Each structure stands twice: as structure tokens, then as C-alpha cells.
Image (cartoon, rainbow over all chains, first blue to last red; front, side, top):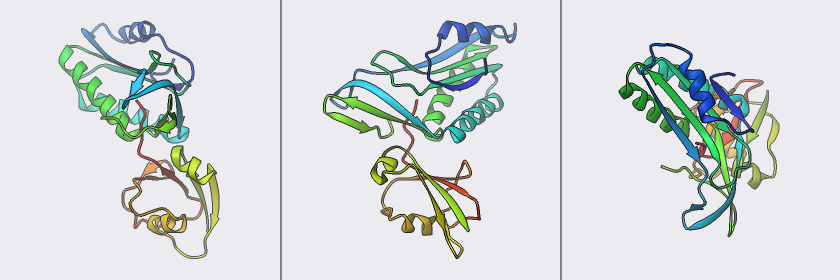
Length: 140
Length: 76
């Protein structure tokens, strides 16, 4: 499967790590970030989170992030997946897996990618809460 | 010229439309477009033209451009 995906269905972290590990025997460290749905936000109970995306732009922006990360950091491979299904608390939303020869650039790239994704990828969350539905403003 | 304008998230809900087509007779900048759409100047917005974010709102639009009018992103 593609290294960069937007999909409704859930993903397997282990499967993605396994695929990344097969890319090169030079990989000595793999760092990952897994974003999940919380059951509370700003004092409100979260029942579910729905997503909306500008599909034509979002996938391109994620692919661009991968390419920039590969240039910016001393890393070997990146996999990046964002779900756009309606998710329940505890469910998986976003996964970044970075493989490198050494741990430091893998950690650094992982952090950089999720920070940039939040700024640059046109996806929006709408939370269903105990007080009704509301669009999420950007989280730090 | 003809423009296709897309709305997302809270903007689409507020306007009760996800997209519209505009026929305009004279050159139009992104600022002109926001005024035409009755967007408050203070509303945080991200604009993209043909899938590229544009920060220079003086940019003049061209016939056939697709303009996305988007709230601040909140994915991840």
C-alpha cells in the first residue's frame, strides 16, 4: 500500500512498521506517532469525532510533507496515514512511522511531520459532544 | 470569467453550500472575493487557489480558478 494515505478504514500500526522495516536493512531505528480520539476536550465529553477533508489538496499536502521530511532529515522512509471516518474515543486517527539509521533523526522527523500536518493539511474535526456538535479549532 | 469556490467545515455549514460558481466581469483579487462572499475581515481563513495555499490576498484570480475558502485546519 502507498506510503501516504487518507482512508476511512482503520490501520494496523504493526503492519505499517513491518512494511517500513522491509524497505532497507540500513534502518536501525523506527519512531512513530499515533494520534487517537480522546473522550474529552475543553471540559466536554466527546462522543465521536467526524472529519472533513479537501481531498484533492490534502493528499498532495501529505505527500509533500513526506518528501520534505526525507530531504530535511537523515531518514530512510516515512509512512503517513490519516483516517477520515467517524471515530469513537480511543480509536486511531493518524499514524506517522519514520525509519532511519539512528533514532535521533527518526524522532525529530516524526515530531516535525505531525506539527506540520496540523498546519498544512486541509482536514477538519467535528466533535459530537454531550453539549452538541462543534467544529474544532486548532489544537496545539 | 468563471470561478469555482469551495467551502469547508464550519464555513460550508454557515453558508449552507459546499461550492458555488461565480461569473465576474472584471479582474478579482482574493480580497475582492472575500468581500463579495461577505466574509468578515477578522474571520481566520485559509485560502487556496487550485490546491495551493495563497497568502497574498492581492493575487488576481484567473478564469477557471478553483478557490477553496477554508477554516483553520484541525486534522491530526
